[in-house]
Image (cartoon, rainbow, N blue to C red):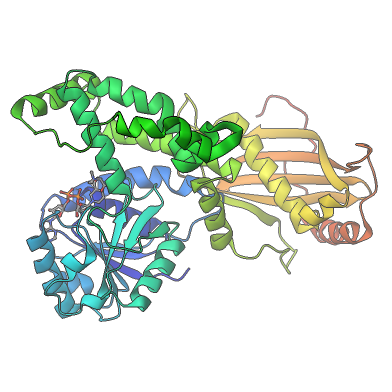
Length: 486
Ligand SMILES: NC(=O)C1=CN([C@@H]2O[C@H](COP(=O)(O)OP(=O)(O)OC[C@H]3O[C@@H](n4cnc5c(N)ncnc54)[C@H](O)[C@@H]3O)[C@@H](O)[C@H]2O)C=CC1
Ligand SMILES: C[N+](C)(C)CC(=O)CC(=O)[O-]
């Protein structure tokens, strides 16, 4: 991915999140925000994002882009490819912002608006070039949640919508093309319905903020994260599926179970009840502490979905493949081969605040998998019935490493002939050595589950690497038994 430049107009909760995602995906970012505290606030969001986002990826992200702050809109928007407007949700502020920025920005730049509820045609009213404006509505935290509702109006140029889709996909987001513009798009309509009903439950003294949150997080919230509403209800209909579900629960709509047709009046009493209950529920935490807890949980959920290759996890796997490009054995075999390059994920750290010992084995296991792939033991080969099993492993821990740090594993083939593949992995962060892992693998037949000779092509590739690596010095620690160092 080549470095491109984006302008963020309004660097609050959402603008800060956009800035963090773009920077960590390699974009240069220019910010305009009249708030003198904007730089400090964005630095705090960026700290959280650096801790959480890179580790979502199983491959290294591009180098972080450059962040700069500008005192005027013209200085921020000159020569940029993307402008994300995230000023307060007030139409007159948004209109004024478009007027200034369109006088100074490239006419082919995408102008995305973070608006939660305005239709693109409302934003475009009075604009110099309405065709340049599209709603790009993200979800908080923008650096972790992939959804962005992309809403063009009939006046938005199709090439702007297409470019917006391409750029959003390239920074790991899922652009959901909302084909008809409506107030609050798709997701905020749904959120608003739940929010309204929750306010009624408090207004009527039925439940507290905490009880409502528990009703969500112990139950359907977990289902929604992976299957949404319709797939979940399809299963709830049993073997007869959706038709049976509607037959059984359709009448409830008319009883009715909800009060959605009415909006609760936001009286002082209701506001006090919601705010006081929320303080009682979570007032012992700072907002920054809650943000970190939220990010830790989201990273764990997203990485779990990645392992299942499902929903948002599938999207993350696709993004990894895009960022990584083609995987092949290097032409130059005169040095150990880089088999892993990635950031330490939040869920790899433990009660000691550093990467847990089990994750060293996981990272070395990933390095071994990559080495197998590079010598030709790929999915097609494994489907023919041959593979490698690890027979012995020896890990030396040399130094600690923390969440978000970039780790690199370099692999040397110590022996690669017949049934044996003997690997030596060294793990680094920058120049600092973190661990070594020595692994003996045996080629097996997946049918007999016993040692077997590898296919000739695989054996030849492995032998070529082993021969080249034989010229390298024997790594310090190779063949060492467990003992006290020093
Ligand atoms: N907070 C949320 O959960 C979400 C908000 N949004 C949308 O994002 C937009 C921004 O909302 P937030 O970030 O929550 O608000 P915010 O209040 O956190 O940030 C707004 C920022 O805009 C700055 N600002 C004010 N006037 C400005 C101007 N004329 N030019 C440039 N900057 C200006 C403020 O100093 C502030 O830093 C809104 O349209 C909102 O609907 C979208 C998704 C979620
Ligand atoms: C409350 N909200 C309408 C500003 C929410 C959003 O727009 C999206 C989100 O992050 O929930």
